[in-house]
Length: 62
Image (cartoon, rainbow, N blue to C red; front, side, top):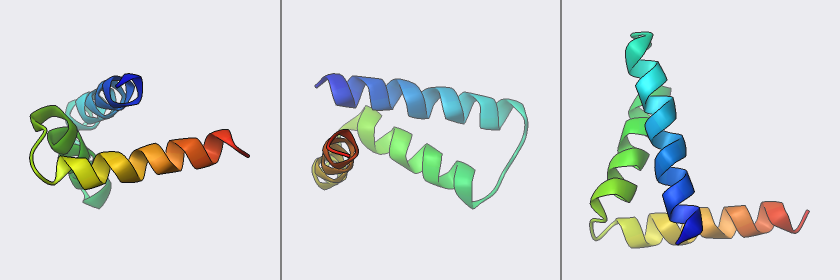
């Protein structure tokens, strides 16, 4: 749960700065999609959440 909340905050902050700087591209589209998945908690959010949790756990074990 804490990972999900922090990822929503992180993606929201990055998306805010990308929109503010009017920097449009594939990176900002990815950030917007990830923010939407976490925020809306759609059916696809489960696998995306599992993937990001696995990545966070793998980085913690380094």
